[in-house]
Image 1 (cartoon, rainbow, N blue to C red):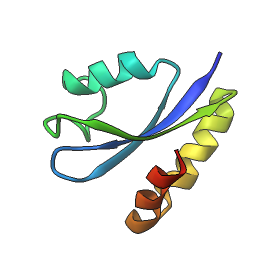
Image 2 (image 1 turned 135 degrees about the vertical axis):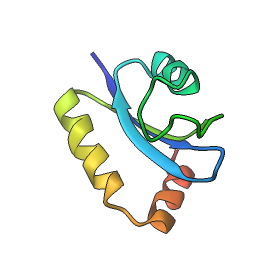
Image 3 (image 1 turned 90 degrees about the vertical axis):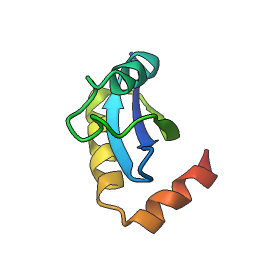
Length: 81
């Protein structure tokens, strides 16, 4: 099963990083206010960045790496897609 690390750009121009094994379903959950406490009321969302990982463990480690980046470093991720 593939996992994804993703970064959402929220309507208020903030960034949210998460992981999932079903990106489409997870985005719908975020749009419906059920995805994460942070994203509730911050939609609509744009998938700013996504990265495929081979396991949940790898995705979780990569999520932490991305969360520890400064905003300007996260913004550079988009050019790597």
